[in-house]
Image (cartoon, rainbow, N blue to C red; front, side):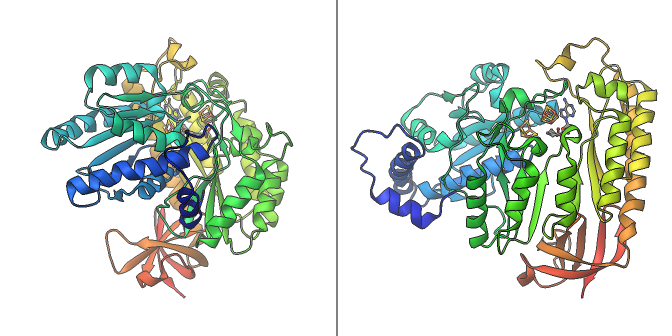
Length: 485
Ligand code: SAH
Ligand code: SF4
Ligand code: F3S
């Protein structure tokens, strides 16, 4: 990232009549300056700043990418708003399950009707879905009104793409299949002033047989520790107290660096950053979770007492078909070890029901693991067939009714065990980071405990961003009602 004052200083020195720089990020600084002029023209035409709405689908990676897009939009002169009647609408898409895609197609029809009323309206699509050639074909054919399409590998080129969009009447499409480039030092506009996600790696090499992420996000690439540390220091200087380190498989961080560094070593470096209060990370793959990491967590004052450890299935046979590279027993042993070494930890997980060939007995195994581990929360998904993945070609796809039956059983088990598990904190007083005013009841604040459990309690909005002591009074399933002490 880069601060506005520093960027301003750089932009002042750029001559738009000089040749366009080849190197990044200098090239994008040039285009930010150029885009400012184009946006300025829009401002004059409209008699006000043009507005932009970035709508994010999918995971924290996408949320962070949207913050990068927002940072650039803000620098070029757009006013960021949340409503889709904005002059410029960007959908940052997800394709991990088919329902995510269907939502995008559904809403595109609605955007088109708005564009018919406002022909100057611009529409851009980016993110994981755009990395699929069949999606691009479909949009070219049936959604001609889209102005700009780009993917996940060239998101840093957004200033340049923005300029192309303004200078072209036709649809601008720029998708890269893969890249090793990691471009630092571009502007970012955070959603929360006091907490931030931060990419430590991109892509995934695991190729779980159901999953499309490795195809749309490319091979695993880690950022240099010094770049990560520098970014966190800047964030802390800017008021951030909690960070979430992001990667599809953070436990394999650093293996492909010129000077390899382990994730646990990175955490120890981050721990030293003064002013930083809390460290979170997502996601851990069970097969790569090291004893070193458990030890570092155990001794850390800042690493939060939460591990998201996707199980996917409790059946060793299905896990093998999924290419997860652990067995039911290995997962159980790992969960037990973590709970033994870090007793106040909360474990959460992801589960897929309905993977090809899954029988009710396999689901019983999944339920058995849930009952033994006792997750604080679990996200349960119905298997979605993703074209191009090995699982999509498997013949024994499970009938819908069977999936539904298994899904309901898993969900019920998750709810029952989580309620019991979360209620172990009843009556305790713990630190919560105040995140926002409660959406339903404005007299309440919403805070997050170190272990990721949510607590609602009476308080003043001025406490947002502060870490306060809260007594946990009533357990309501996945969350608490509490009182500030
Ligand atoms: N890298 C993370 C997960 C990223 S995707 C990990 O390995 O844990 C988030 C979750 O979506 C996965 O954990 C999985 O439970 C779910 N998921 C991925 N592909 C899916 C598919 N084809 N159908 C249903 N759920 C899927
Ligand atoms: Fe997908 Fe598996 Fe990679 Fe997670 S680890 S992103 S589930 S391939
Ligand atoms: Fe979706 Fe892409 Fe994340 S497919 S889950 S937004 S990496």
